[in-house]
Image (cartoon, rainbow, N blue to C red; front, side, top):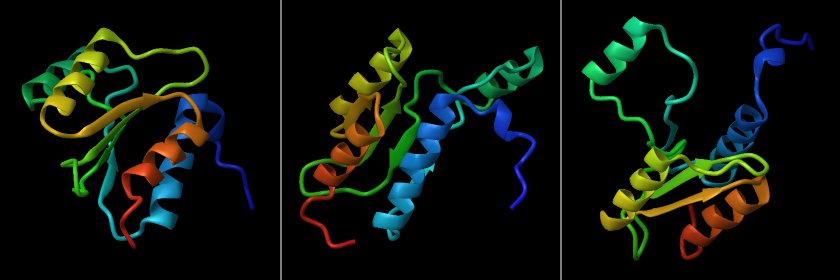
Length: 125
C-alpha cells in the first residue's frame, strides 16, 4: 500500500480524531456521528464565508446525534496531551450541557472510548 502524500501534514489531534471516528463507525455503526470541521487556517474570504453561513467557533470536534435515556446527544471536544479547550470551546460545551447534551472534552483515545461506551451503555447498536 502506498503512503498518502498528505499524511505528513496530519497533526496528533487529526490522528486521534480519525481513531475515535473509526471506533464509532465500527462499534456503533447505526448511529449518526460527524466531525465538525472548525479547525485549520482559513483565508480572509473563507473566514468571512464561514461566519456568513452561520459557522461558530468552539463547536466540539465530534457530534453524535443519538438520544439515550438521559441526554439528547453526545458532543466530544478532542485535545492531545496537555492541551485544554479554548474559552469558546468551554462556552459551547456549557451551552450543549444546558440543552441536555452529554458534552465533554477528552485528551486520549482511551478517555474518548470510555465516554462513548458509557453514553451507549444500555443500547444494543
